[in-house]
Length: 333
Image (cartoon, rainbow, N blue to C red; front, side):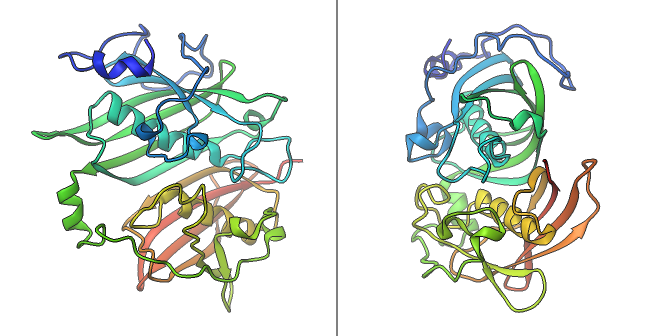
């Protein structure tokens, strides 16, 4: 059953068991065939909060049971933004964006969260092997195995959960992650935002970019940091006209912009423009406003991944920490 038909199927009292596999608490090192998950076309863009069809990576959704799902995705051979200097590997940030889209998909399509409800990522972790990123002259078909925990329900519906994700390519696990999120109805969101959602703030003209060659970027518009005096400290550079990072108007800085800024800060810290963020872990404490300066500070930290260099990145706005990231950066020859 394709994702286009799944909404109608889940309107019944029980979630359909389309793909019968045993529930697991830990993902195995490998899986078999993708259980008829399809890679022929992308899903409807509104299900993953994207305006551009070209920015949709998901292709299908299959239900195993009430809390376990398989999601198909395809990573392009090249992308206008999520790309490395070398064509030999996919950008690891593709996994972070794929996880974001997959969580939105199951929220709307399976747990019936209304499309106008507002989401916030609270904690996000993802990691991928360098081998799993290797390109082979064709788009990469990706299978996400997703298990939901701590599902929060109210009279109005599901309001959040924690999702564990395993990432597979050609039947072999290449990475995974975890995302804890919550969501609220529009009226509640408007109260939380103090009315900031009613009119999109103007971030103004983007600041001077950090030299792109230092972070593996050919286009200055893809740089999301502006230099500041002092050590490893920069100002977040916001370009609301960027077609990928700001795919549609939003009233705060998207989480993927913060993750990219952390990646770029980590590259500057390790001094290797070709280093890969093979693992990253983020905590999002507050909404990051578009019209207030955001200070980005990085320092070395203990890595989780063997053979990598760890970097901690802290985002501050109005003297308060709004987000924190830990990244493992690896130089792969």
